[in-house]
Length: 338
Image 1 (cartoon, rainbow, N blue to C red):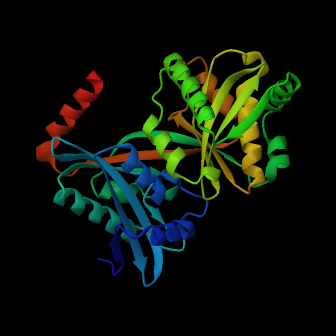
Image 2: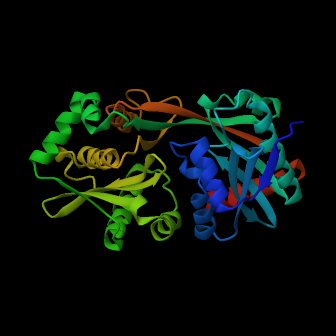
């Protein structure tokens, strides 16, 4: 066993200081604020935070959330974590320590399952496999790097994307960003239209409300593309450290000839560049990515033109309390019925 010191549920000050050092580019789903907003937006949810230290230096952390159902915690989700300092040459022991402590918490508080979504680039997968975690699925995040500034970004993106942005501006599409409640409602309306049209599952509205009301208003905005007096598309942006996240976007499905989505995201990226942010996260892509002719090919082709990078995420699960696994089946049946 290691001699690392593990802290459970440290203060926001300690957590934010640690995440700034360990992950200076940002990790919104591991931020202290995200955990608090999950609690505020989902009654009955629980948050567990573990911080691992070597002397006075924070070298690792992980935040997990779970819901209570029939008196049990169902699945403890650690999304985009754990995070371990790159200064550590041997990451195996701190990762094991964090995971063992989460499992002990699960047993104590009757949480049936643990799930970790880890970046493949972290190289943690083998550690989890040795601890009997099973890969449930894989997915990707698509990230556009902004570190060269907006001029370099403009040169990097596909020529078709540049043409579309120019066309939108020439046709009079105007993009605004706002933290006004009326514009948030416009975003919700467009998101609802898009969900019905495309059939995907968005982030919960209660989470958007919590971000809007409880997070720094300078770090949460909606960008809206307007043409001829009508809002054609909108995207909800939240920033953590040096990364801007396009959490969800919606559109009316009209006016596509003036490319409102292209110019809207371009203006959001310009805004991010002007404020010194280094990454723009355009959200999920399936693994493997869609192939030409498939139902999701269009959106994937659209994303690729931004010339970003796929960052693969492995979702690894383990049943901690096998005796109570039927509770998970009951939960899943209820969710499907809803």
